[in-house]
Structure formats: C-alpha cells, structure tokens
Image: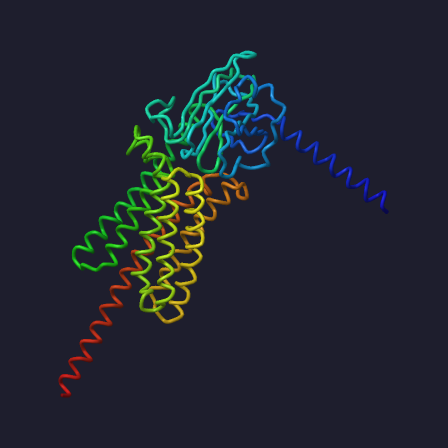
Length: 409
C-alpha cells in the first residue's frame, strides 16, 4: 500500500509539472477577426526588486514563473514585474491590438522583439501625460506587429503603487475598438443616470431644505468621481496632464467617498438616536480614513492604500450590522437602506472576485461595480422619499396630539 501511495503521489507531481509547463508554453491565438480573446493562461512573470533588469537580460532570463490560471494579480509590492506570453495571429489583419484594462497602473512598458536583441518599446501609464498615448483610450492599447499566421513573444514591464492587476485582451483593431465603443456607451449611460439623480435631489433639497438630501448629494458626487477615476475617464477628461492629481486621486477619492458615506449613513439611520455608542465608532472610521491619506501623502503610498482598503472593508460589514439592528427597532427606512447597501456590496464582491480570477472576466463581471452603485443610488433616493413621508406623518400626528391637548385644556 505504501508503494502504491508513493507511486500515485509521484504521478500526481509529474502531472502537475506537465500542466505547469503546458500552461507556460501555451500560445494566445487570435483566430477570429471579429472577436476579442481574453488572455488568462500562458502568461509568465518575473519579479525585479532592483528595477534595473534590462529587456535583453529579461529575454535571456530563466527565472520566469507561470501565472496561475486567471487574471495576473500581484499584491502590493515595491518591485517591478515583467510579464511575457506568446501570441499568434491567425487572422488576415497585418497587426493585432493588445488591451490592458487597468488604468490605475503607474507605468507600463510594452516590448516586442523584432529581431534577436532588437526591441520596439513603448511607455504609458499614469506617470505619463494622457496625450502621449499611442491610442487615446481610457485603457492601455498597444500595437503588436504580427503578420498573419505568425507568432512572437510580447513583454510588459509593470510598476504600480497599488496591486499589479493585468486584465489583458487581444484582437484585431476593429474588434478592440468595437469593445471600446460599447464601453464608452455604458459609461455615458452610467454618468447620465448619476448626474440626473444629482440634479433631481438638488431640486428636492432646494424645496425641502432637508439635510438628508444634502448628505446624499455629497455622497453621490463622491461615488461618481471615484467610479470614473477607477475607469480611467477622469484622467482622460478631467486631469490628462496633472500627473500628481492622477496619482493621488486613487487615495483621496475613496477617502472622500468613505467619509461622505459615513455622514449620510449617520444622518439617514439616525444612529445618534438609535445607537449612541455605535454612532461614535463611525468617528473612528473617519480617523482611519484620514490616517490612510496622511500616510500615503507622507511618502508611504502603498501602506496608505492598505489602510484605506482595510478601513473600507471593515466599514462595509459594520454598516450592515448597524442597519440590521436599527431595522429590528422598527425603523422602516433602515430596511430600504440595507437592501441598497447589499446591492452595492454584491456588485463590489463580483468585481473583486473577477479580478482574483475566481469569476470569469466578461462583460457581466466587468461592470458589476458601477451597476451596483447606480442601483444603490436609485434605491437610496426612494428610501429618502419614504423617509420624508414617514417624517411628515410623524409631524402631522404630533401636531394633532398637540392640538387635541390644547382643545382638552
């Protein structure tokens, strides 16, 4: 039995080795000129902690390791990461387009080897003005010189103050541009919905002077700015040449959105009245958000991002707990709030699981976070209207009681 067990273990290790090697040498093939290929296998990576390894040495290096199946995702690190994969053109197009859909990267260097020791390189990223890009897209697009029925290695040198996430796709120029067009349409609709909600609630606030609407307007505004920053449109449209703004917007936008959310939640759920002790914990979260921003600006950008991300994660769970307790006390607006918050969190979780490779990278998982935020904003607007109606009924009942008391006297 021991021999059989040992043999099975050895066979399993051999199969794993064969699988890893097969993944490492697999070729990304673009066979249909009308379709886009998602690159989630066959990618290898090399970590460069010194930031000095040249392209020539990278090509000769034997230190590349296969990326596990899914979207390449390296956690927060001060290192530079090299990625390579082999791509083949089976269409009639004279070249292909490689698309990297993560606008938050500091720098991305694209390399293709034209001949042994000769490379064509191109640099982009948030550390480069937007107007210097090869294609004026919110994502990073690279031309791969690849005649029909040929293949070659493509190299990417990536540095990021945040996590190094590489959602890669490849296709012909027409196929990639078609995807970009649909993306622009989607984000145009999203921004239109959010702006419409802002204008509508500004009008309601001007007629009611209810502070809840003011908190809501500030919160929605910060959510919109955060979402268009993540999508890359803020860098493209708002600050294309302001590199420091582009870098620190990833810090300040989530911080402002988090603090605005805390202000709105405290006001909407009346936490000071229902849960005085729990209400004070929200002040701690504001302090943690501020601490993360200070740490990032002081020079430790990566650690500051870590603090902000952890604060946002814990706050999300805490808000659910507070909303549940208040809803159990009979406060109906808390039920509407919990539904809207859960819708948003589901969108965020799907988006994160897609980045981790747990869920497939497709049109449904890519846009779950903005869809979730839009649905949250709509539901919160309904919740506010319901809350106003409840307050009006309570005020009318209180006035009726006072009038009855006066009549009795």
